[in-house]
Image (cartoon, rainbow, N blue to C red; front, side, top):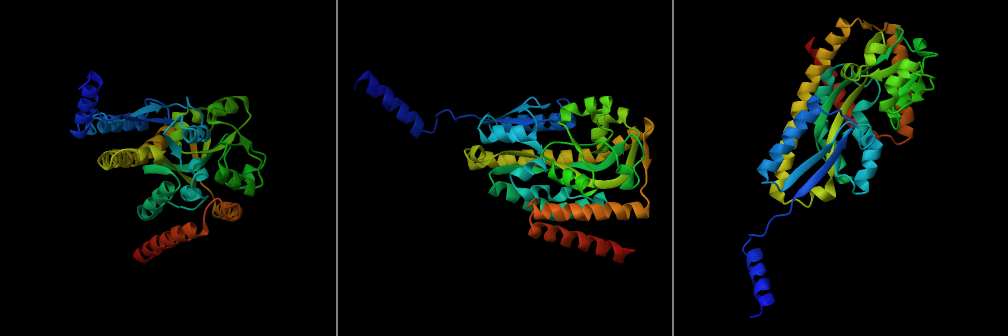
Length: 338
């Protein structure tokens, strides 16, 4: 037997015997979430556990703080194969699967209790829809309710007239809401919001209390309208093609560990929302209430916005019907219990 033949025979023996070194799959995941936050700390811990449980076959490399661009840029890079996943907002993922943004329709929910009831029955549907459209989602993370933050009190739609309202790029739901109110919002990337507040380019925005604190926006604003404008949430996703290359056992491990991390973030974020409200009050920001007449105005605007969004195909009527069915069930139970 020649030297080459002996080498080939030995290599075949290793492969047949199952002793070949398994390939490593590294998921490159980007997000605008800053490093050092609970989200990043928790997801890194989950990635370490995945690497340990799969004996190094599955690893994650993270690019936090927007170094890979905004959500739209991250999605482009995933499609181009430069990245494999992202920690993205539900609204951004509407470009992949429109019904991903269904929870964020304006003035849809009145409370976190309503959100929890609906999500317990619909999160799985959203993740299934994402998977059918090429992305594996590991869970949905609570982002709190967006409130209207402003330099002057906003108690009604009329109070918004003449305001310089910020919206992020590629956010059709927020844009539809403010345009239905007859406003011309100012579109700026997240990285430019503080500069916009400092220069007076913008003076009003929709933000969660956590976002207002974390990004220091509250330092330039004085009031928050204490009515849940829309619900915010994030989803950790990876490219389905890359995920499908893992063996079934490793896929199960990744789903289990990342799913648990998302549940932990969901709980932590809800607690952070309460803490952020307390912190804002302590810093002197005033929470203002909407009058019944003002709320009726806002709900009329929200109805018009939802109609416009439906016509544009921003979500499916079937998914909205399912959501409203659950919401009405919950409200009926609450009413009966009184």
